[in-house]
Length: 241
Image (cartoon, rainbow, N blue to C red):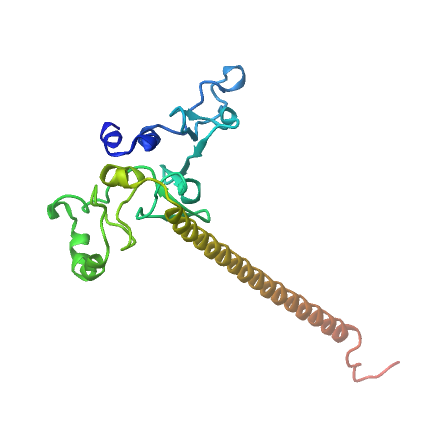
């Protein structure tokens, strides 16, 4: 936290506390009723910028907070929620639940991807030659060297950007517009994809229903033919008595 404090301008030093705080912990103010251990109380998933506290939903009230979310057991924030609070450009983003997010902190590196080549396993060595061209096009985090998915990104997390370029994280209208446009585009794309998947499911469901109806109709016709054969078929050779 001290390293980030030193690199951030005074008005943005709350970012250091944002990244170093622990979230999704039981709130001391809103414990389960009656202190029952089996019941879960409120969890702290908000950060108060004015005091550096972690808060639960019941503590928030009208305070100036940033909501923390979870992805694969790591803390993230929506780009739309923070892009007007600091310059979030050049941080690797991901689309989770239809929203573009960034991680608060550096995550553990994939095995064999950080450090010397001796740690690579045999499978990674086999694929390293074929993926070298793709790897060359990708950038890596300027703080922790984690490989990034986008060649336009420079950092893997908020903390990594603050640790290298904290002084350049002051908010600006231009940075906010760029981040919002990117975030909005991702959300629109996700909505379109979701709508397409729902339409496809409806078509498949309709096709299955039509096939089932045709099968039922066929069985009904077979039953009618069987009845006709049993009661209205050919009369015996002797004829009527």
